[in-house]
Length: 273
Image 1 (cartoon, rainbow, N blue to C red):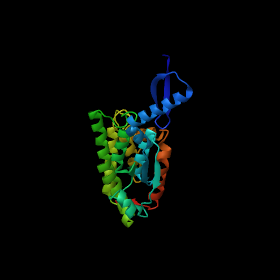
Image 2 (image 1 turned 120 degrees about the vertical axis):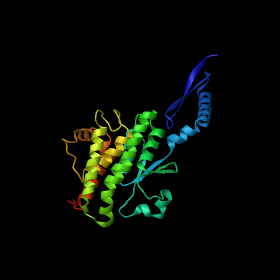
Image 3 (image 1 turned 90 degrees about the horizontal axis):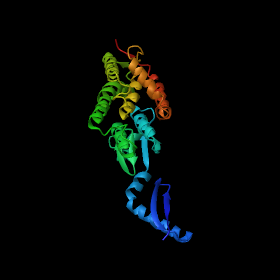
Image 4 (image 1 turned 60 degrees about the vertical axis):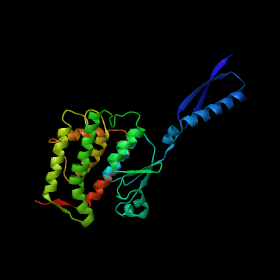
């Protein structure tokens, strides 16, 4: 019996299902195609759900952690809906938002009804689920440990001890005189980052990772308060330029970074002597 290969294609799955069937009239071949697709659909329902799940990112673009999540999404090329949250108007404290995230923080990610917050957790999750490779968050345990260390450094040292220790008094009580120890803390952070970059192109080695996305947003925010000396910190300066040249950087991060600069400079802050 003569046979031909019938190709069943579904655009939502972007994949092919192949079936060997008798060479029959076109009407019967169409029926076979439908049956083949139904069989394929039953076997791949989970893959279909994963590909068709709806991603929603809640945030404000001036926020460094939000921009870290946006950089990860952009690098992965994953489509998503962006919902702006006005943190200054305390929209994160609304009953509706508190149901999504009781810690009332941004970014918050919703993936097919499942909610995740903290930019580091969001970025790691996105790469693990949607990445075509593991380059942004390596599966190799030693490489991943290095990326995780940089993420914890950003979270505990750069963001909490550096950035938030300055911005929280500004926003909460209008404290525009910043203690000198905060200046010293920022300089120490720059020293650490310069050391991390010694002999490497990126913050956790020689390939771009989600650690770069987290740190670029917070380091450039700190630069609003303490300028980065391009001579003393030549490696940081080169690293920033390298990330700014990413094709998706401007849309995912550039505008939000400039918005934050404008917002912070309105306070006319100074450091105490």
